[in-house]
Image 1 (cartoon, rainbow, N blue to C red):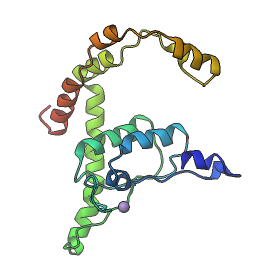
Image 2 (cartoon, protein in one colour):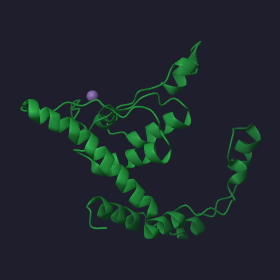
Image 3 (cartoon, rainbow, N blue to C red):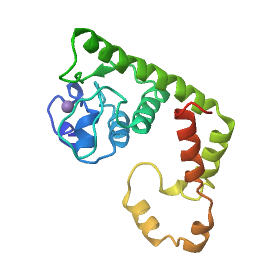
Image 4 (cartoon, protein in one colour):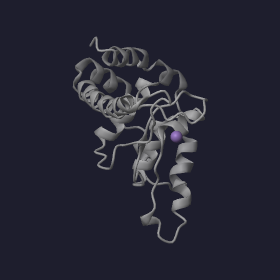
Length: 189
Ligand SMILES: [Mn+2]
C-alpha cells in the first residue's frame, strides 16, 4: 500500500490505517509495519486490538493475547510522538452483557495506559538501557553506505569485505534484554 500510494495523483491525501489483528492473522510483525508507515509519514490512523496468530479475524480486547507485541507497539507510538487517534477496533465476547461490554472498552484503554507507563519504566531502566547500548554499539564503519540509494554506494557495499568471524564475536545479549522486558511486564521489576 505504501508503494501504491506514491503512484496516486494526490498521494499527500492518502495514508494507511493498519490493524493489529489483520497482520497477526497472517503471522507478520505488526510493529515493524507500523514503523515503516511512520517513517513514510503515512500512519494516518491505527486500529488497536489483539489476535491469536493464524486464527480468524478475532478483534479481541487490546493486549489480551500477546502482551509483548502490544508493549512494543505502544513503545513505538509513544517514543516517536504519534499524535493521532488511539482507536480500538475490537469487540467484546459474544457472551458479554451491557456492563461487560463497557468493561471491555475500559480494558482496552486501561491496558494501553498501563503499557505506556511500562514504556517509561523501560526507557528509564539503567540495566535495560546498558544492554541496548551494547547491542546497538556502532563504530561508524557502515556510515558511508547509509542514507539515500546511489549506484556508487551499492557498488561499494557489494565490494566491502565483511569480517564474518569478528562480526560473530560481537555480543548480542538479546536473551538478557528479553528476559528483563518480560520481568518488567510481569511487574516484578
Ligand atoms: Mn479485524
